Amino acid sequence: MSKTEFDIIVVGGGPGGYVAAIRAAQLGLSTAVVEANHLGGICLNWGCIPTKALLRSSEINHLLHHLGEFGFSADNIRFDLDKVVKRSRKVAGQLSAGVAHLLKKNKVAVFDGFGRLDGTDGTRRKVAITKDGNPVATLTAPHVILATGARARILPGLEPDGRLIWSYREAMVPTAMPKSLLVVGSGAIGIEFASFYRNMGAEVTVVEVLDRILPVEDEEISALAHKAFAKQGMTLLTSAKIGAIRKNADSVTLSVEAGGKTQEITVDRVISAVGIVGNVENLGLEGTAVQVDRTHVTIDSHCRTGEPGVYAIGDLAGPPWLAHKASHEGVLCVEAIAGRHVHPIDPANVPGCTYCSPQVASVGLTEARAKATGRKVRVGRFPFIGNGKAIAMGEPEGLVKTVFDAETGELLGAHMIGAEVTEMIQGYAIARTSELTEAELKETIFPHPTISETMHEAVLAAYDGALHI
Image (tube, rainbow, N blue to C red):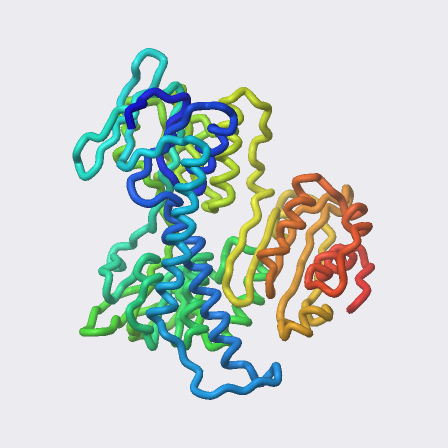
């Protein structure tokens, strides 16, 4: 690349960074992206996308072992793990190439290397790029967006070794299917891996230090998820702590304290899924006014840091750690730079999804958090067993729960567990963004037969009007 002066430089080409770059180019701003590894970031290459490909394979494996419920029979059902993994990697590769095409189409300059702030040149920020320790180029721009994402948090004693103790990376490319597995952490990442390996036939134990799995979700949904996973054969240990860890020749023995008792559990492999930390190192933040709080860059409502001309988006800028939040912040940040009027993100309007089986999705306040604000609430519930499409699909396990402000009718939150709820939660997200009340939601006509009818019934149920239960 011969050009080194730009309007905007984006450091990081993940779902926040590449989207920010595309939007900037659309607005007529000359833009560069600096990416040290793969375009698409962790999400596309080692997170959101390849894990969904794996989960799709595990869903198919589960269905193949339940063909009798649908009137089919088959013998010698088996899977080829190598092909399952290769398909997942192929999907990730295809989409990474797609991101490269989009950037090229929008005339975004892409620099292969690691970028860091390197002082100023008048009113322009400098970004120095290196690759394998060697200088590549120094770029300048009045605006620099940091979008370097985050990485897995590592607990002492649970350091991934690539063989017996895995991070998400090793868990996505197993060379052999473990017969037994222990997952430390029951957030979205941990539960998704637990669901994948259980559906592929492994014996799975989940250890969670808090008193329930999926702790950020509504308590009622967490309880239903716990019940569903236990029914599938998972062992779920909550309020639990990991003690001594002993690595054997081809297994791991862990001391686990739960329920006032300590037991030793021996498994083939361990997956550590205990959260993430921001990639704030080596960004050249020293000597700037950029503030870092618990490994995440502090920003205002327009993604500005304390340093003029420097912005941060996505996982680097803190929770919620979701790709769609990063992408939205990228657009918001660039449009604010371009002088457009933007609406700051309301974290309560960011939907969360966990692609386990059954799926879990939510937006807004849980029932407990809504009550903690001092409001009077109305709560509606509707089970999948009352929905014709869910029964026809063989997916009667699930629930939709709505939480409304009893005085104003504002939809405070919605929480779902069951088949395809990650596809449906957007309906409630639109309702919250548009500030709809129960009046508009009750008057909305939902198509029949669809699982989405449970959403309508859950609204009606909050106002004593559910029809099919």
